[in-house]
Image 1 (tube, rainbow, N blue to C red):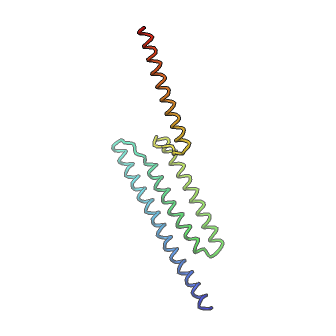
Image 2 (image 1 turned 90 degrees about the vertical axis):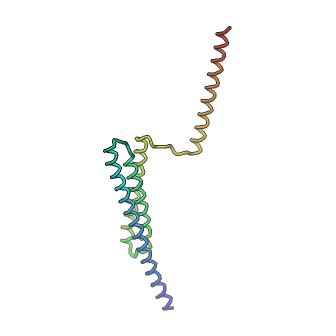
Image 3 (image 1 turned 45 degrees about the vertical axis):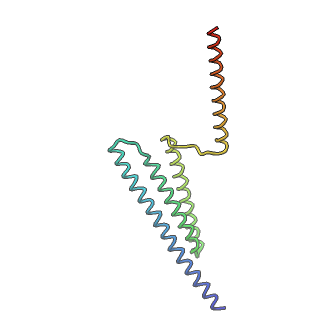
Length: 159
């Protein structure tokens, strides 16, 4: 019985260390994504300044930050495996909530920036697809009616 208890305690410790190592690696991935996104945005900023072009730098950087935050939140979730005290859990929960709020704000900012720059494409839903089909049919009917009216007017003009 004592051996089983010792084995379980050791197994918990090993799992805890593995979870911490994986969480650390995932956090490093987030840092790398932020770094690469920032460097790309910085290079594009100077390239656009010199060439007088318009590149969606804010959108590109925002996407990198949002992706990095997802990695960082994943690492925080993994750290819940290692939590031993309630205070650690509360701190971890607050960090996760703050990162989630940041992610939502970044996604909102990206969406607004895309709308302003004209890159925003409305998400397709069944309702939008049906609505677009109805609009196309109405346009086609209007074209046909205009064509028929034009033909009638031409006939009346010839007679």
